[in-house]
Length: 266
Image (tube, rainbow, N blue to C red; front, side, top):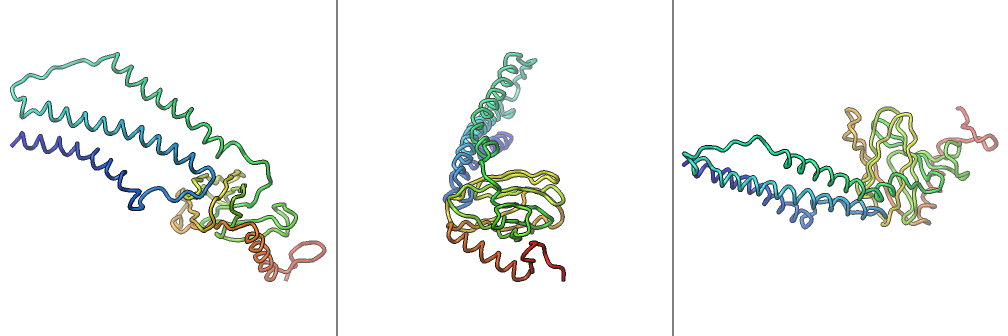
């Protein structure tokens, strides 16, 4: 009976890596995997993810197989009557298993530097395409008007409806109006915290027309779950027509003085 119990626990631990690997192998075919990539830089992020997944996966499987082997080989019910052998550790082994993880982490840090620089450091030399202001619990958007400048009376103001031209570099000026938020575009492999008091640049290029989710990836209050928006990529002519239409709609509900450009008080 003891032998059967020992076999059960050993096989249970062996099932962990077997089922784990099987789950990852099957997930893409049943559409339970990474969201569709529609960005110019997404392949770099995905390649880095797959590399780290493979590396840690090999270590995980090796560890679980060793655990199974030791549980099977040194099962007390099989080796009953044998005295245990005690050791006081191995300094050499401790050094080895400290150096190997440290070297692995250092390699990963160097390996990902180019991907990090492309997304976080090599800012395009251009004015902001749009300002995104995170606020409990919505995304406030501001597009520059005909003057091409943000913060002037002809700016276009919208909420949660971020429309951008496809196949063009986009520079977002990210801000927060209240607490810490996180601007997360899963399909564009973009995630950037919005920090109160800071203007943070975020840039990317969409490669496919269509609409995808904007979500907040930082717990920001009781309404965090409903802080959602949509990012839509359209062709340049469609974007220009959309911008003109939205500006006309805004002007029709908000009288503007022709000379000063200031909002007329009712």
